[in-house]
Length: 304
Image 1: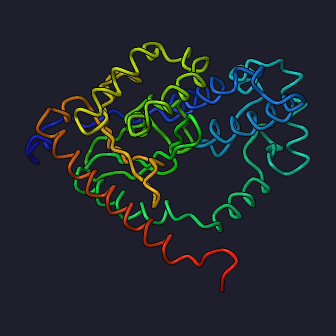
Image 2: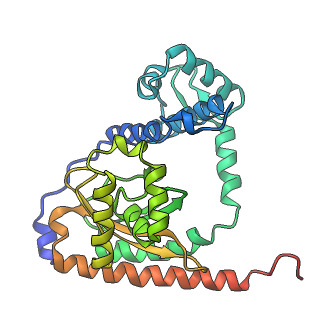
Image 3: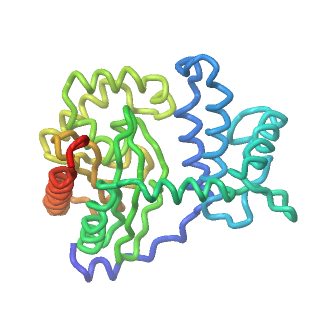
């Protein structure tokens, strides 16, 4: 697509961050709805962690924080129960309450954990940084890194391109069952058929919250992705939001992540899909090579 065509395209409407946050929050709830699968005695811990995640997501673009009423509504839990958990989280410093507005946002201790997490070895994050920037600059669209976490894919990084259109269908922290979304589908398609069976079995309940992603449909999408050499989300998750992704393999050649590019349907005609796929594959190989070098340079445990 030419630069002139981009210039003639009308500017994108301003993003509705609140709507995006509520959507992210609903996904968080969907992934934790089936408490029957949790270890015995862990439900209260799980509910507290879910509420902590909801505070983070809903207050992501609101410096003033999020109200008790909204947390109650989104979580679907009794108001007294939500307040009780919030009091405990505030007491431990993971959440703070604004004394003037009574709204909630992440607290100091949550920030401390984030800092501590940032000090761990993050070979994948470091190896992908330059690739995300190059893909975003070349495509001019929004680029994402999705990392596999069991049967789910988590968006851990996003990079805005210089183009006029921003895609807010996926944000850092959003979590989907593998197969839902371009990056997540790319990871699923790179797994063995046996592993795919396991993933579909473990996400069956959660996928009930995603219309149109039954087992048969996902198997068809995996087949198409393998044939095309890339995963295409043609507006299946959010209407009008398209994306294309390829898997990223670690030093042991396991599909651990995916790079994806998102935009509007008009920017994903077949010729441009091939261009984007080639670009993403090049960067995926670059990340794989960097991960391999990092693994080879790391001393073997127990040896000097």
